[in-house]
Length: 610
Image (tube, rainbow, N blue to C red; front, side, top):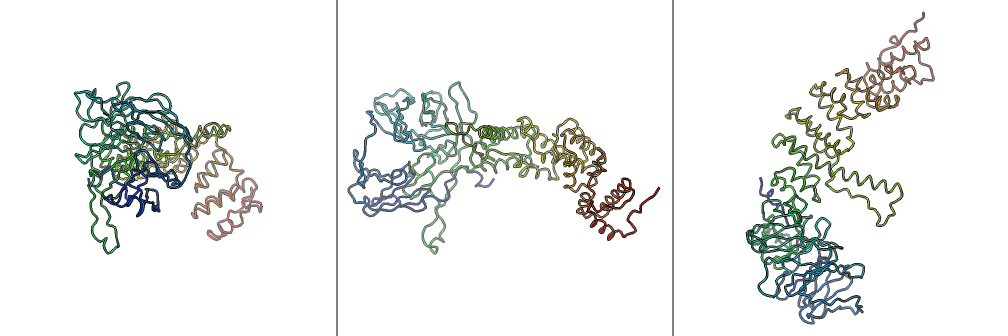
C-alpha cells in the first residue's frame, strides 16, 4: 500500500493565502462570511479581506483609531463593523441603527452558527446552561435552554464550561451542539469523549450520541461531509466518526468508536511564492497539527503564523483499504458526497480474481445499493404523481428529489462493473452467472423492474458456455422476466439452440405483442430468416410486403440470404397468382435487377403451368 493510500484526510489544494500575523499585522476570521481580515497598523496602512470563494480580495484603508479587537462585514460585504473597545462597535459609514428586540441575560460567552442562524449563549455561574436563539427574517426567537452535563460535580463555583470545548455544526441536516468532555462521567473509563446534543427548532435539546476518543490531551473538532473529525495534537493524528453507522445503543444514547484507525492528515507542501526563477526551490513541508493552528466550523483550519486558510477534505479511496467489512464500508460510502466512482470500484474489486468476495457479501452490497436506488425511484415517483395531479403548489412547495451520487442504477452497474466482469476469461462461469443472478434477485426483492440488458448479459454468458439447459430453466421458471428485446435475442439464438425459437414466440405471446411489431424488431436486428419463420409460424406470410424483406436481406450484404428470400417470394407469387413475377405495385424492380446482376437471368424462376 503506497503512503498516499494511507491518509484519509487532506488539506485543500488551493488554500487562501494572507499576510502572516506579526506585531504590525493583526489577523481576524469572520465565521459567517468565511473571510480572513489582515489589518495592518490598525487599518491605516491597509486592510485586506479574502475568503475561499473570493476570486478578488477586497482592499481598503481606515483611520487608525486604536487597536482593533474585531472586524467583520455584513453578509454580501455591504456594511463594515469594527470593534475597538469591549462595549462599542463602529460602522465607518454613517448609518442609523434600530433596536428590534433585547434580552436581559448574564452571558459568559457566546457562539454563532451561520449555517443555521443560531446563537448559543453560556449562562449561569458554571456556564453550563446554554440558551439558544434563532434568527430569521429580522426576528429573534428563543429556543429551549439546556444543560451540559459536566464531567464531575465541580468543586468551586467558577466558570467550568469553556467555549473551547463547545462547537455547533449541522450533521445530516440537523443542528448539533458538540461538547468535548475531557474526562468521562463514569470513573472506570479513561479518555475524553465528544457528546452530541441534537438541537431542534421546536422541542427540547436531547443528548443523542457519545463519540469515544480513548485518549486524553488537546483536541480540535471539524465536521466534513457529515463526519465528525477529531484532531489530537499530542499524537498529531485525527479520527473520524459517522453517527449514521451502527453504534452501541442503550435506549437513549448511541456510543460510537472511530470508523477507522487514527491517521495523520496527508503531508502538505507549502508552494513557494515569488517569480518562477525563485520558485525552483523545493516546496516547504507544512507543520501539521501546529500549536498555531486554529480550527473553525465546519471544515476550516487556519494557520495565522504561516498565513494560510485551508478547508479540510475526506479522501474516500484510502477508506476502502482500511475498512475491510464490506457491508460497513458500503454504509459509510453511501452517505458521502462524491461516492459514486469509489462505490463502483469497490464492486469491481470484490468481483476481481485477486480479491473475490463471497456470494453472501456480494449480495449484501447489492442490497445496500438497491435500497438507496429504490428510495430515489419512489421519491421520483411520488413527485411525478404530485405534479400530474396538480398538487405541486402545496405549501411548502414540493421539491424535485435530488439524485445524489449514492444512487447507483442498473446502467451504472452494467457499464462500469457487470459488463466488464463477464468479459474476464479467468473467472469461473458458475461464479459469473451466480453474481449476475444475485444482482437480478436483489432488484426483484426491491421491486425494481429489471432492465433487459441485464437479462441479455445472463443469456449471452449462458450461451457462451453452452449452458442451454440452465437457460431453458431460467426462462421456464420466469427467472428472467419477459421483454421484447429478450425475445428477439432468443430468436437470434435459434441456429445454435433450436428450442430458443419456440421459447421466444411463447414469450412474445405472453407479452401480447402485435405480430407486425415483432417482425419490425427482427428485421431491424437483421434477423431476416427469423422474421420470415416467425411470420410463417403464425400463418401471416401471404400478406407481408416482399419489398420490406428484400430491403432487409440486401442490407445484410449476404447474397445467399438475399437469394433465399427472393426465391421464397417468387414461390409465393406463383402460388397466389400463378406467376413468379412481381407486380409493379410491389415496387421490387431494383431487387429484380440486383438478382439478375448477381445470379444471372437464368436464375429467375420460370412460371409453372399445370
